[in-house]
Amino acid sequence: MNLQSEIEFFTDLPLIDKARLLNLFLHQLAAEARGAQGEAADALTDGPRLRFSNELMHRVTRIIDQLLAGDAMRPADEVVLRMLLSPRTDTDVERMVLDAYQRAVRGFESFGTTVLMK
Image 1 (spheres, rainbow, N blue to C red):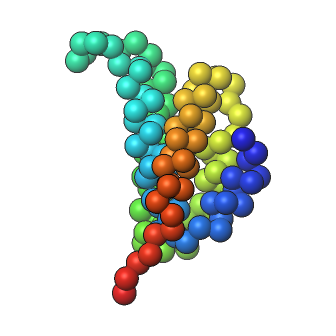
Image 2: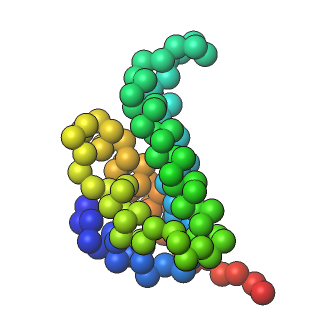
């Protein structure tokens, strides 16, 4: 995956589609994070991975809110994509995020661009 091309792709999207893509990413990340849970309701097999995904979800949901509200103070597109896709020292977490992002992009592209009726 080429980070710069992903930044350019994201930057070219309308705001609503940026929010849609990030929402799809969160959906895929939640699916990835399920692997940190054990079979029983109180079993936890990978606490740090679950904590990481929770923190990332917290940050990205705020960005989605800022996108939908048209908040000029939201992080720049490049900052958002670098936060998501930059290399990490924990390669398991890096793979989890990249896999979630790639599945989100594939799902996003299959629907085309969102059109808002006014």
